[in-house]
Structure formats: C-alpha cells, structure tokens
Image (cartoon, rainbow, N blue to C red; front, side, top):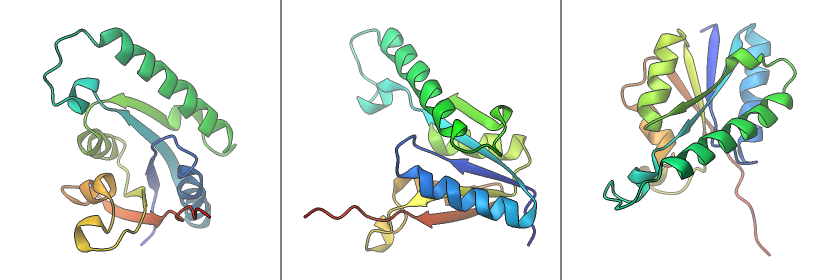
Length: 148
C-alpha cells in the first residue's frame, strides 16, 4: 500500500523523536506528506471531572506550553511544514481520529512501549488508536530506558 498522508501522534516527550523519525523516513520513501498532532487533555479529566476550582488559567498555560514544545519538535524536522503541526484540545483518540479523517490521512503513527501482555501491548493511547481509526495505524516501538 502506498500512503499519501501520514499523521504522527506525539506526546511531546523526547521519546517521540524516534517515532517522528520513523514516520518521516516512511513518508520520504513513499513520497507522502506527514503531519504531527498533539492533544492537550482537559485537566478536569485527570481529576475525574469533579474539580471544585476553576482550572481555565492553568489549562491555557498548559496549552500554550504544548504549542511551544510542538513548534520546537517541528523545527527538528525541516521537511515538516508548520501548517502540518496540529495542536488540539480534547480526548486524544477522538481528536486524532477526527483530524485523520478531516485531513484524509491514510496512516496514523503512534509510539508503543511494547509492554508484556495483551492489555499492555500498545499502551493506552496507542491501543485506543486502533478502535474506530479511519485508516491504518502503525505502532513504532519506543526503546525502553535502562536504569543501572
């Protein structure tokens, strides 16, 4: 299969560099365009949705910082056009699927820690991408950091 548009879901940690690199090499090999997406989750979700305070200022700071990090990642990849860097707010699976369909992407690339056991095989976000994805999904193994 030849891909035309590859969407790379990133968490903006250094672990996503190999994932982006793999997607970029694949895109170059098949002549595809590639894009990045990072989804900022609502802070209320982290607290079970029942937070007795206004988190809007903190949420805005988190979103702005994510935008700065996304731009820094994009700068590492000269073939990546800034218009192909997407920062959105919401639930990761839904937002990634929405953008993939909207942009007519035919492959979503995510990082996977490759933990043992079927439930942990891909990790929660990578596993989520499989369910209801509008296109193929490729999980790129992220090397585990060894501690001495």
